[in-house]
Amino acid sequence: MQTWDYGEGRAALHSEDSAVWEAARKAGLKQAGEYRRKDGVLFARQFVGDKEKVRALIREIGDREIGKGVKA
Image (tube, rainbow, N blue to C red):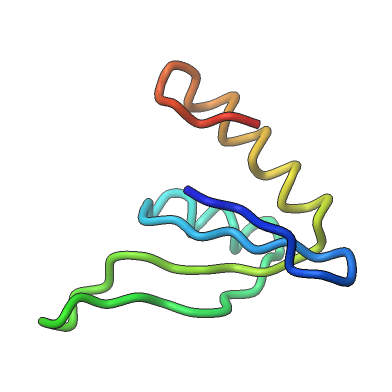
């Protein structure tokens, strides 16, 4: 999972984890893109939303994923 500043108080989140995709949707983030392999299989999605919503989501995922390398 990666995040970065998207400007104007927004942040972007990129993930290859479908559980993160669902959490992003539930948090109200908007899907901004999806990434597929050459054979058409979906492997990643990108979301954009309010920077504070993205930070809160990262903290929530970090709490659930302690020990799996996700940092808030």
